[in-house]
Each structure stands twice: as C-alpha cells, then as structure tokens.
Length: 86
Image (tube, rainbow, N blue to C red; front, side, top):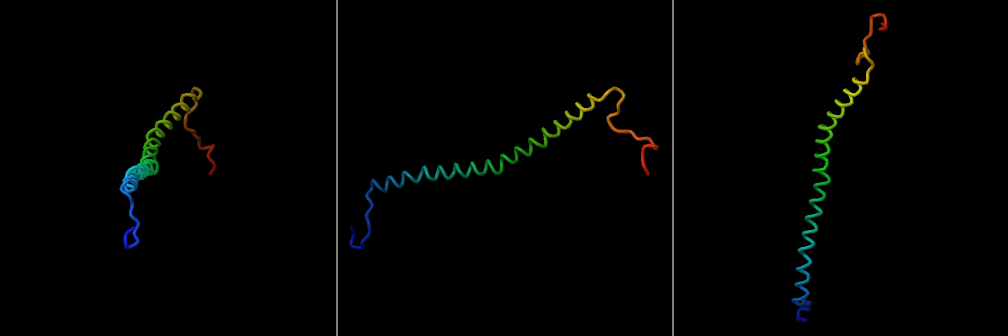
C-alpha cells in the first residue's frame, strides 16, 4: 500500500476489468437496438402491413360476398317509395 492508503490494483486485475467493459458495452448496444426494433420498426411494419394487406383483404371479402349473391339479388339494397317509412 502507498502512504496515502490507496489500494493498488494489479495490472492483471485491471486488464480483466477492461476486458469486461467491452462485452458490457456491446450488450448495452444490442439491447438498445432490440428496444428500437421492437418499439419502433415493428410497429411501422405492422402499420404498413395492415394498411396494405387489410385493404386487399377487404376487397377480396367484398368480391366474395358479391359472387355468393343469388342471381338477380342486388348487392346493395334497393327500396321502393312504399317501403321507405316517412
């Protein structure tokens, strides 16, 4: 020990501490990237998928309903004046 009562760290221990710092920094960077991907990019991809594929699914459903309609049955209801209550 020094006269100032300081603890002297051996070079081997200091090297081990320095070596542990790199994986810790790399892990922090990976966790930060994962957080960004899950909370930002995944939501953006989901929104793009929903707006693109959702519209196509709705169009396919509309066509399917129209195709399944019996012959002569209009796809939209038609009311005559006598059927509409005033």
